[in-house]
Image 1: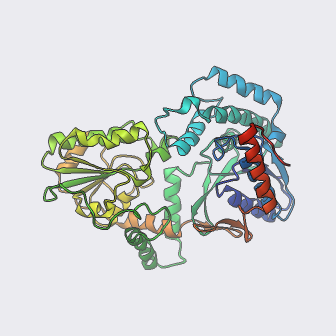
Image 2: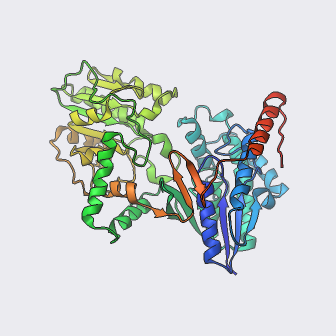
Image 3: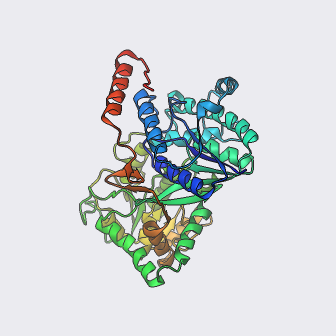
Length: 488
C-alpha cells in the first residue's frame, strides 16, 4: 500500500490551508487504495511563523480553521497533529540542543538539517531585520527548539511508515523546512506547493524550495511552450504585464507606486548629466533561502550599493547616481536601512530617494541612462522599456539574456563607461507572461486580493460568531491574567 504524507503545518494567515486541502482532496480522489496522512500543528506548538507572539487566541482560531477545512474533505485519510508523533525524548533532545547552541544563525545545523537557516528565514520575514541584531531575545530560539523536536519525530515517523510521497507548502520556514529535509534524507519525493498568483493558481516545486532559480525558469519556459494560445497572444499578455505596472494596475504583487506622484523626480539635480539609477530590492526576502541567492560579488546589497556609490563618486564625478530605496522599506529603522539613507554622504553626485518619497520610480526609469539592480523586478521592467540593465545580484532572471552581468565586480567600471545597448526583451516578456498566466489552476481552492481564500466555495478564514467570541475571551484572559485558555 502506498503511504502519502500531506503536511499542512501553517494554517492561519497563509494560503497554505486552502492549497493543502486542495492537495489532500486530489490525492484522495486519485489514490483510492493509498493510506494518506494529513499532518497539522493544531496547537501542538504555541509559536510559529504566523504566531510569533504566542497568542493563545491565534492558536484557537487556527485550530478551528483546520477543523473547518477538514470538514469539507470527502473521503478517507488519517489526521495527525504534531503532538501525536512527538515523544518526551524529542523535547528533551531539543532543549539540550538549545542549551548547547546559545547563538542562532544560518550556520546552526541539527544532524543534516539546516535548522538555523529555517528559523532565520522566519525571523527575517517577520522582523525585516536581516542583520539579526535582535535575534538574541526573539522567537527564533523557540522555533529552533520546536523544529529540532519535530525533525527528530519525523525521522522516526518516516522510518516507521515508509512514505512514497510527501506534499508540503513552500518549505522555507521552520517546521515546513523540516518536512522538506527529512524527505530528502529518506529519498522521498517532496512536492512543495506555492501560490503562483491570485485566482487559485498554484506552482509545484519537486524536492526544492520555490526560490530555486533553475526550477522557476523551467516553469516559465514550459508555460511559454504550451500550445493552448499563439505566440503572438503570449507576447501580448507578457507586454501587458509591464504596461499595467506603469499604469499602477494590479498584476501579481502589491502596487508600490500608488503613493508616488506621476512624473515627479528629485529637485536640484542636473539631469543634463549622465544618470545611473539603482533600484534597491527586498533582499531580506532572500536572505535565508539556500545557496541559489547568495550574491556572487558582495556580502549583501548594502555593500554592493556602497561599492557602486564610491565608484561613481570617484571615477564618474560628472554623472549622477540616484539610489531609489524600495518603498516597502518605509517605516523600518534597522541599521541597514539607516545605512542606505546615509549613502548620499559618499559624494555630491550621489542622491538617495527615501522609500516614503513621492518621487515617481518610473520617472526615474525614464531619465536613467543605465539601470543597476540587485534582483528587483524593475530590472525586468527596465529591460522591457529599452534601458541597459546591470545586474549585481542573484535573482530568478540571473541567467536570462536580460541584463549585463559582470563576471567580477571590477568589471562594473567598464560597464558604466561603455555605451551599452539594451538587451533583447524576449526573456523579460516570457517572465511577464508567466506572472500573469503561469501556474496551474486549482479545482476547489480560490484566492483574490479582496476576499482572501476559499475552498469549495467556503471562505476559509470566516469563523462563526461563537468561535469569534471564544477567541476574544481567550485573548482577554491571557492579556489580563496571563492565563492561556484553550477552548476545545
